[in-house]
Image (cartoon, rainbow, N blue to C red; front, side, top):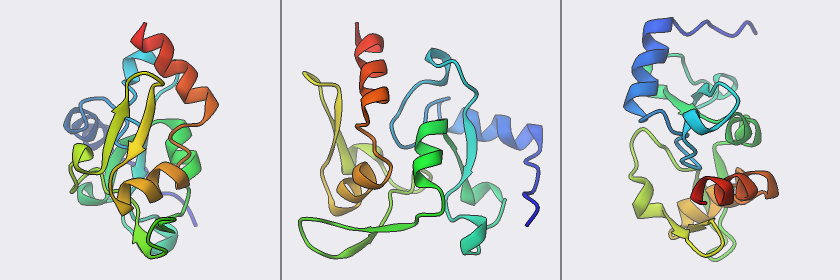
Length: 134
């Protein structure tokens, strides 16, 4: 399948809407050395499209870990839960920061599943968060 090209104007609109931050780990694009991706919330392989309502800004790590995932199993409830949707859900309702360790904590089943599936506390990003916080 050929991936559709996201027009430059649409890419810029999404970056502005996202505050130029990753929709998942909240990393600021300006503090990284790589260009963030326009990711498909519902992957093309799962029937998603390249329209604005299905697109958001994601750092390369989060987008790579997410890949084609849309759901995960919450370890607390054992239920299958949809991953966080940065376009329609409020980040602070599903996640919080652990200031002392620069970790992201899942507050809800959606938050917990997303933290685990996207490896939001992987060593590389936690080290970077510590540098940003300093």
